[in-house]
Length: 342
Ligand code: COA
Image (cartoon, rainbow, N blue to C red; front, side, top):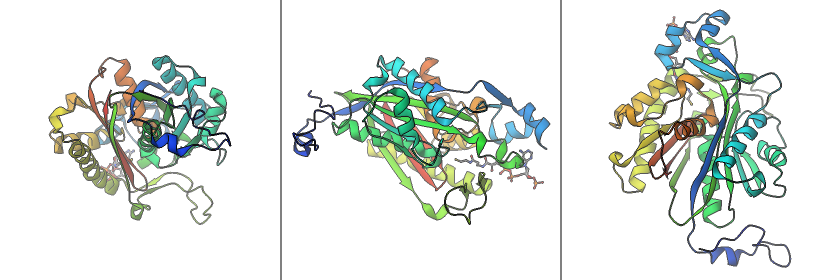
């Protein structure tokens, strides 16, 4: 198989030679390594009991969450993403300088611009390569993964980082018990590389902006959106999330002509254990084949799927060659899924 680095694609004028790119043989992408990072500080449900009118029992019964990690003062989304990215590169046996593409899912960027992808690129020292962020809330990693996969398969990237990282503790209203107990901070990353056989078998992305008022956070340039912390209609989000995620998983399996029995692991968005259980139940998937980290991480939005994936890989649950379905759903609404041969 012939691989072409993006630099090798430049013609004499420095302009990318698209005819060469199109003549590339079929390239697949595979996950070469995973990594994650969680901040040191842990906030338990019992800690929350001291901060607001809530209880460990209520939080565990309604969400399955027991604890979440909270970024230290001054620690940013990119700080955490850098740790996750370096861990993923180590796992893949690669150096930061090998990275030639960065897609970064986050809704809690360090700055409005430069974007988090660019800030991470500077930290890693891979100057000149494309780097950007995707703000699709909890499905940010699924979007980043899908885009990175396409660039690798097109021969335009050889070592692509797909990241999900969030510092949600900075956009949570700590006086709103209905949302404050749900979220946590962290980062996850995967490195994709070209492969002869498909690792990422398919990705499926969707969005429906008509639901924009059910889950949102102001703070942008529309000054009429005065709420700068997470606002959510929990009940409605719950119901739509379950139905949508079931459809997304079915779509992923159907696109590959597979039955659910073919899946070794479902790696779902870790928003709420009840959402995960309801989705698994509707699909008749035993919970023994579902990765759950929500109890330890809370909802880390774009970071949740790569965090869960990395935890399961490092604990030895997920093994090379196994078939995974990844899925996430979030504000927008946006949602996405992927079938992955790890
Ligand atoms: N502690 C104790 N009581 C709480 C509470 C808390 N942290 N938060 C809300 N309550 C109370 C409410 O005030 C309400 O009290 P009332 O009956 O006296 O009015 C009661 O609990 C029930 O509230 P409700 O919002 O109906 O609870 P729920 O069963 O829907 O659970 C969520 C709330 C948020 C856990 C649930 O709706 C949910 O998980 N939604 C999806 C959230 C999500 O995952 N979003 C991200 C998707 S990406």
